[in-house]
Each structure stands twice: as structure tokens, then as C-alpha cells.
Image 1 (cartoon, rainbow, N blue to C red):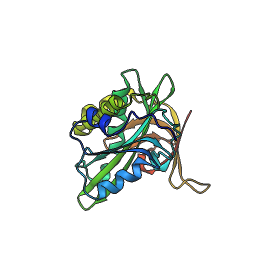
Image 2 (image 1 turned 90 degrees about the vertical axis):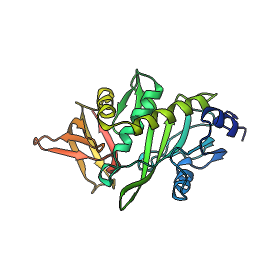
Image 3 (image 1 turned 45 degrees about the vertical axis):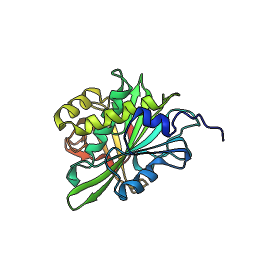
Image 4 (image 1 turned 180 degrees about the horizontal axis):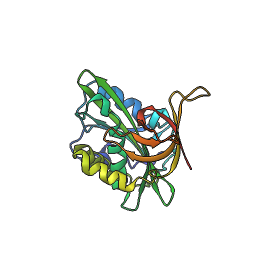
Length: 238
């Protein structure tokens, strides 16, 4: 397999100097590698990036389709100070950071997609390891569909934007997220994990997003149900 050669150790170090980073010509999934590295105690801010991923994964293990040299997919280790019940906030942080990096004209579809002109420009996935004190560490995996070589500068912009959102207080990040979130006001059906004929579906109008990352859906009966991103299998928007 002939690889592009724009995401090697030298290119990543130049774009993100002094940061723990693993770079690979090819890898099955940066998400899996980053999780193992996080469990081993790597500091916050560590990045795993590959020239090519055979099976990049996002939210709920959904596979991202990404050809050789097309786009950019990588994983970032965070060690946020969050209680377990706010695990889903990391989706808000990740999507907001990705949208910031990809440009002011982008919008967000809750919980994990960034769009431009109605089509996917990027997506995020979050795995959080929970402990007695809350979230011990998390791996944020990011897909940028529009990434073209040289991709290291885009990698740096996204990493820095996600870290800025993670380090910010809740109110401004949530306000910016809601401003961009095109899901609000639409009719949706949230199919929860596990998917299948017996799985639960919450349908109604998307009202708002909470500080734990949950989408509030007002059903036909007038009740409001909070759906957390980590419990979502599929969101259908009409």
C-alpha cells in the first residue's frame, strides 16, 4: 500500500510540538490504540494518528468510511474533571471544537456530526472510562471529511479547538453549541441502545441540549425525555 506520507512523526511534531504522539503508516483503529495508551497512564493531550485506518470508529462503534489519503481521522486522550453523570458533555465539547476548527459556517447535528451546506463535514466519537470519582479519562475520536494533504496543520487546529472547549466553562460552550445545533426544533426519533425490534425509541420535537450533553425531546403527550448521547443508537431527523 502506497501511503501519502504527510502524517509522520516529524510532521505531527512540527504541528503539535512537545506532545505525546503515536504515528502509524497504517492502523486498524486509532481509537483502540488510544484507549490502551490511556489505560497505561499517558498524559492528557496525547494523540494517536495514522496515515490510513482500515476501520476508523465513531460514536457507539459506528464505522466511518474513509479511503486512503481521504480526510483525517485521529484520537485524542483527555482527562477531564467530570462527574459520571456528565459523561455525555464530552460530545458537546468534541463537536463544538471540531466545528470551530472547520469554520464558522458549519452547523452541528446532535450529538456527533458537524455539517456544511447540509452534508457531513466531520464527526466525533467519545469513549469515557468511569471510576469512583467520575470520568477518569476519555478518548475523543475525530473524523474530518474534508482533510487533504498536508493534514498535520488541520490536525493541530482540531486538537487545539477541542482542548479549548474542554478547558472552558460550560455556559459559553453550550451557548455556542445550541446556536449551531440544527437538530433543535426538528421532529426526531431517537432509537436507543440496544438497537433492534424490542429497542426503545423516543420520538417528538428536539427542544434543547442539557449541560450533560443530553438532548431533550418533547413527545406528543407533552412529556419531556432527556436522551444521553452515550445511550443513542440512531437519530432519525425529519
